[in-house]
Image 1 (spheres, helix red, strand yellow):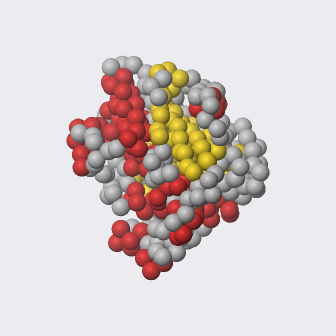
Image 2 (tube, rainbow, N blue to C red; image 1 turned 120 degrees about the vertical axis):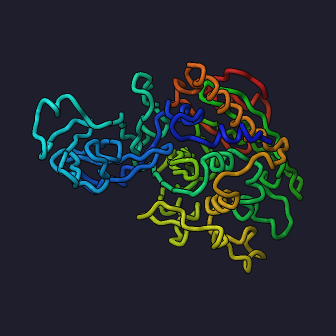
Image 3 (tube, rainbow, N blue to C red; image 1 turned 180 degrees about the vertical axis):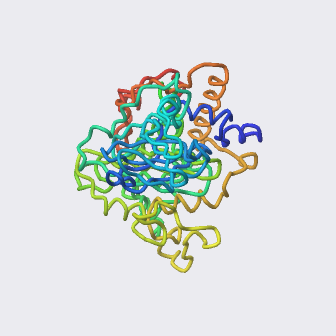
Length: 428
């Protein structure tokens, strides 16, 4: 279990916090491109790491990110007019470009003043159907990462944003935990649970976990061994990378697909971006070797049901008071009672922990090794940044990131299945 001090360090991401300082050294998605659909469209409020910003797309199609409150008298620019290659504050009409330059000051049209001052603007990159921003120290801005999904054909990628009312670490740890899949996702991954049969590797609910530190964070394998009732031996290897500070890749099976045609495969790169200590925006990028069927992907995740989520509003709608949408009358046929998709099941159990889980009360077991390793890496990064060093993962080659999930004979070391990863400390 974590100490109270460790839990506070890991969960608090606001200005001048240890973990907030770590997160501010990285690029993060702040919205999807679809949320700023056309030039001069409505601006968008952005909450990131406990601070407020406004994103807008100007007349030329370029995206800017500014502090939300106008530098003049503090009115929200999210109420403003987006026009003529800038965003105009409604209060006194001051207008700013995407780079923060003051373009107009109707109540004080002094060009010298305008040339000496500008609104606080932040570096922005639009890539992979998302808008990324860097909000850390300007002199320490890193290169924009070459994420593996950016260069795939547009048809082979789709992006889904889901806002949840809990701390980022709960989302991250839930996604890094491999053993829960054999229980929570029984309806999808071990469909013979009703007959108490053994038919897939996912019937092994206690996989052997091995982890190694890498230059981007760490990767681990969950190795499952199962002998079915007909005597068939199944060996499954599932390799997942943890990418600093709060991302992961969920591998698609190499003989099935996630939201794509049979014969291809699609992985999910997930960013868990803290809005603040108690709210998180997950950006799910589904990408692969074949075109991705967004409708099929949403259905598998359970996001095709408007009572949980909709395309027009990225907020997860269920609460504890609503039982997170669980229907206990169908639990004879649906293992969880959600009967709605794997991600809806994840969101329910993660949300049930509260906004910030008290990790001093937990009791960890070997199956939680990946969760423990993520905490260790984050605490190490906080220590490094606090001592004036760069956080680990900042300059890794993101283009070589990979994940794997397949039934394979265990002959060589599992790291051979992800040869592009740079291992910095082999502790498997």
